[in-house]
Image (tube, rainbow, N blue to C red; front, side, top):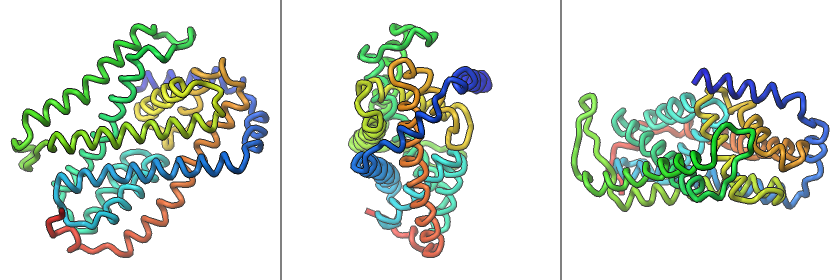
Length: 301
């Protein structure tokens, strides 16, 4: 990870002086109101869909929190996760809110595990399929051959396939992990996880494609987004500041004018990171004020 961080830093340094910041600002100002409205709807739809990830955990653990409250906890956590990092938003905040509503550590851990597995198994399905298809061609500046990218894609696709196979084979079996009982979801629930996550990743790609105005093929835009997302996870910088920009500059600067490219990236940050964070703050305050330690004790449907 330190090596990857140095690589990203080098990418930033090598491109920062080339960025047309004046052009980026001009590109931002040129966006029609209808495009920004459509992009905002896509961003909020993605966050709303992510909220459904925790509903798979609700179904799996059968905890008693209402559907909408479970969904609200996930949406609030995701907004903080994107801007403050996964340990703060994805884990700590989610754990606090669920604990405030009376869920024990075992159920909270399983919910978080279901959410994380939903997100990254869907990533493996989408990224693996895209990379393996050969639709994405890497620029010559990237030290990775297209053939190697296809091999990586096949490897990524094997992850959700193996997960589905494990759910088919061992659903119903119980294991003890640190004295806690855990079990795999049903194959049907595993398929729901993959469908939710794959749809969400494609929705995020659609948002960036819209902001780029169709300058690059959807497959290429989605591929760059997927690459930026995994680099952002590997480099522990809050909100991935600079990481998203570095990856887009490295992979698309030869195909899209830099001003337009950076304008799209900045618009993406505003709509996908900052706008939902404002909503997440409001949800967090509401969830804290209305927490009920007995709410999660009943068995849910």
